[in-house]
Amino acid sequence: MLILELYIFVLAGFVGFMVITRVPPLLHTPLMSATNAISGISLVGSLVAAGSQRSSVATILGFIAVVCATTNIVGGFLITDRMLKMFKRDDPKAKTATETKPASTESK
Amino acid sequence: MRENLTQLTYLAAAILFILGLRSLTRPDKARRGMQQAAVGMLFAICGTLINHEIVDYRWIAAGLVLGAVIGYPLGMWVPTTALPQRIAAALSFSALAAVLVGVSEYYNALHGVSPALDRAHMTAIGFEVLLGSLTVTGSLVAFGKLQEILPSRPLTFPGQNVANGLLFLIAFSLFVLVVLDPTRTYAFYGMIAIATLLGVLMVVPIGGADMPVVVALLNSYCGLAAAATGFALGNSILIICGALDGASGFLLSILMSKAMNRSFANVLFGAFGGGAPAAAVGAGGALPVRAISAEDAAIQLAYATRVIIVPGYGMAVAQAQHQVRELAELIEKRGGEVKYAIHPVAGRMPGHMNVLLAEANVPYDRLYDMDEINGEFPQTDVVLVIGANDVVNPAARDDPKSSIYGMPILDVDRAKTVIVLKRGMAAGFAGIENMLFHAPATSMLFGDAKASLSKLVSEVKAA
Image (cartoon, rainbow over all chains, first blue to last red; front, side, top):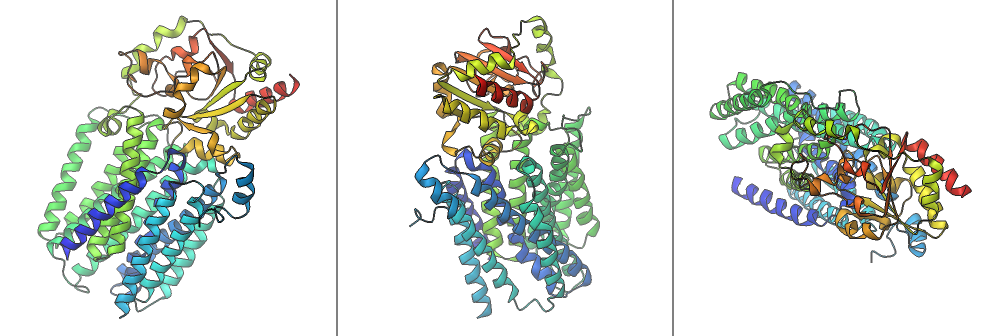
């Protein structure tokens, strides 16, 4: 089991490295807030700790962890979206498209 | 059956997260991609809520609601100028969640309410709380420095690195002790206490301008702590996200260090700007400086055909990005061409200047990276440097004796004329004299960046 987990870790790290190398410096701040929002995934661990009623200490610690992780998920995704909304091209044709429904016309 | 369903939602989440990160390579597709990643997060949460181990939903519901109530203002109301400290605060939240999960796992196992920990799991939990607690306090100190609750200059004391090294050794020995025998509670909690202290001590000596590296590095620790949580709980989505987060933070810190021509070790243990470079300062005192009035500067700008704007931390402090954009528009209206040159470490976090300018509605295709634009300076009529110093210091390129020698810079000094907006003649963060300010082609417009820019705007209008 452990060796399988190590495989997952190393391969995911590689994928992350490959993908993120190509993120332009322009979007480095949104990248940080995005990875921050994604790291809120520790919520899945916190939920089990808060809800499995094994001991009251675990429940309380789990509860605080749920609050912290949810804060990051909600705040992180919202602020990333807010930032990405601000990045606009100068092209007048694309401008109307990006302002109303970002990238929806081009992404197909 | 239920377990399989949970795993499927995790798989979906992992795919959407990776696609979301990939979308960040394209500014026009990024928003859609990250919205899909948010949906992936929702899948993972729902998939977890059906876990058979969860028997009581009251605390969970309360935690989710409270978290959302705190998270919403942190996402929607925080101004873009406060982004660096906002990210530092978020890092400490995520690390805290990891630590708390680790402690509760340990506590449960110790009190026999969940299976005893084997060596592999204890190691994972050990890493989790060690890296986690270090990140919690480290990020809090970074937050304090960026918010200017704490002094942003490096705070040092003699023997600092030795003390930190010793503390690290003690924390590591406690880690080994608790892995060998998980019942040694003193070692477990002692390790947390020391890691917490170490987090503070590691970030306190690091100055404001090195914050991009520190924030990126803390981001990477935070990811590793999350991955360790995944190993401890046997949860693959946590491992994947931790690895992604860790890789991203690690990559950003490498990029930032490179942009300053410094090694990790140098950033972490060097306490830059502390004292050593002071010798170089005195020499420049008597050098000539040409001050310019806003009127004259405005005339140069109004009749220039190629203008490059170089923003720095000073623009962020003065919150002058909207005035910058206004000025650029005026110059463009008069037939000039305006580009922005962004140094990778300008500001207090990776990409800081880009976000500020995007907020002020500057189209992102006008923002150029250092490598893209450096060749264009010789053909540029006027370069407007706004609150940047070390990133335009020619000594980094020409003077092997300078303490910032080797750091890649924007070749502003090769332009035909340079106008520098600056509050006074104080040396930059690195504490070294900037010969650009004394060059014959350079004139200085002293004052607050925002006020100076407003003056320039009205003068260009009148010209």
